[in-house]
Length: 261
Image (cartoon, rainbow, N blue to C red; front, side, top):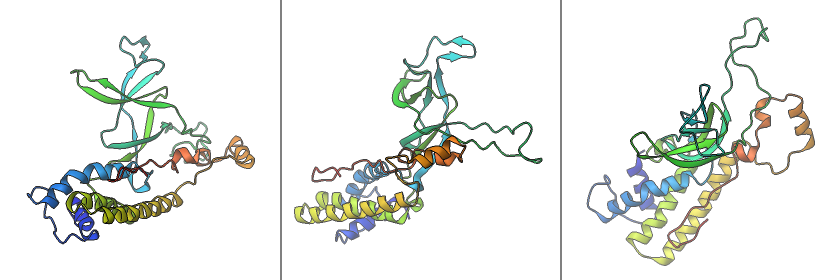
């Protein structure tokens, strides 16, 4: 399945009999699909921390306050210690984590230890901000400012052009969502558009909840027993603040009637 197939599904869902072969033909349907497809799918990718789009990367350092043992003459803006290049395929930056050392313990925990150490705490609420800077040619670039050294990013990858990698419920949400825009652009039927918006909201709610139920649960209050387990060296995954790590911090999406949901 490709982007054109997704658009044809959306057209069929809203009762359009025409089908498009590509985004380059001159039909109104193709022009509408080409206009809406990428930005609307990208907005839905931001709408939840979809598990299928989760990505992790070691960030490339751009600037630092101290380079080697010398204070930099071109540091990141205060009060940040490091600046990293924004991942080129990042649609939404979820959180940062430190890089876990891959050296073994001495003496080793087992006689044949070859894997990384097991760390009891891996923080995921590390402060950062997104910003812009300029590259060496004076062109604007996106950067991440933080005080974390050797940072890794957990983010939502832009899979808007790879629908074959989507979860099936996300695909259903995309086609329903696109359909609401296709109605407004191709048919101008307000009643049908309102009906389609309601369908899209229901499908997106189902997709979001199903995705969240398959991951780490959201937690507003940390119970005493879990706090004690962390203090006693529980596995690092129990130290994740769940709402930060995988969560329920959904973002709104806009609809063609001006509503945000």
